[in-house]
Image 1: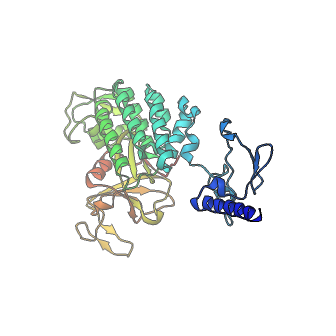
Image 2: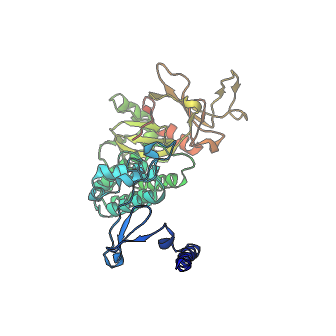
Image 3: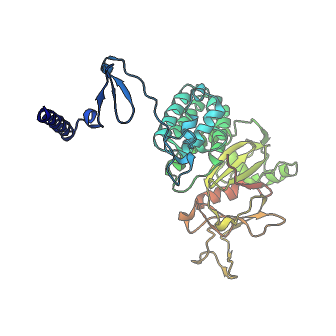
Amino acid sequence: MIRYLFGLVALVVMYLGWQWYSGDPSQASGSMLKTADGVAETAGGVAETADQEKLPPVAVRPQTPQPRPGLEPSNVPGDSSAPRDEAEELATDEFLTGDPKTLQEGFQRLRRSSGAAGERLGVELASAVARIDSVEGLLAVLGPGNAFLHSKVGRKAARQAVAKIQQLEPESAVEKMSALLERCMQGSICKTDVAAGQLVDEIYHQHKVLVDRVVFSPANLRKARSHPVRPGETLGGIARRYRKQGINVEGWTLCYVNRISRPNRLRAGVTIKIPIEPVWAKVEKSSFLLAVYVGSTIVRLYWVAHGADDKTPMTSFTVGAKLVDPDWYAPDGNVYAFGHPKNLLGRHFVKFEHKSYQGFGAHGTSEPESIRSMSSQGCLRMYDADIEWFSRFVPRGAKVTIAATSH
């Protein structure tokens, strides 16, 4: 009998060893003893019924990850207190209502977002914008600044606005397109923002066509006076007459407004128009854009360079003397005549007058590659063709505002 019991024990030990060797976790997790009521107990203390496999599965609640040593709770993966992507926070059902302020914020956040959250935000923005069918609604959604220039969905929305603006009456279209260009000006546009710069040029090209039809047309006398030309009159003489009445224009100003090639080509008996709204200019330093206005209408838009190390002050100047083929008085004290290799001014220089700031102005440049950068001694650098038009059209005494508007 004793040998029989020893043999039985040996068989049990061999069986358990074989189970462990075969890797069955349900059998090798610990020693198991079968009780009389059919409940098996493991060494870990977890009880299971013998027919457990017949019961429906029980949902197991995920365990919250515990912080690892050295990690703040907000940085633990899966922790609800961890910061979320800005784009993901905005991608909600409320976002799809088309609220202009929410969509404006969407364009701003899209510029700072990337990855899957940014892609989702872009899709939702595009869906919301597609449902807007009015010019006013689109301009409201684009916002007061130019964040829309820096995403595909924003640029598509701007082109959608341009297409709708072009369906308006010319005078209304000029007004709305000016409002769109002002948005383009307000905010950063780096030289490396190629797509943003190309869209600004595209919008301005469409706008310029409208301006030439409406503002620079002698037949359109809206916000203008008509003047019958008498024998012996010149555009310069007519301009001086109206300046005495508080309307600041010059001969070249009237040339462009009336589509006359040169001030001395004026025939008696024709009627010209005199714009009664002020001619002025504004520079936005962040976008490197200069706009020339007649009243509230942008008539020309130019890329510029301004002062390195923020040397161009944010203030309002008035246009002073206009020089052709100017000498350059360099910061090192030397004077370089026009045509000298070290003369950086180009053919035209427009002085800016201010009671506190001296030596500032706008001029051409022998370094056109510097346009759209902070590279000058404080003056505005412009392409030669642009400064020529600017110096002729903008009258002396006109206001030039330097700003750095951001939204």
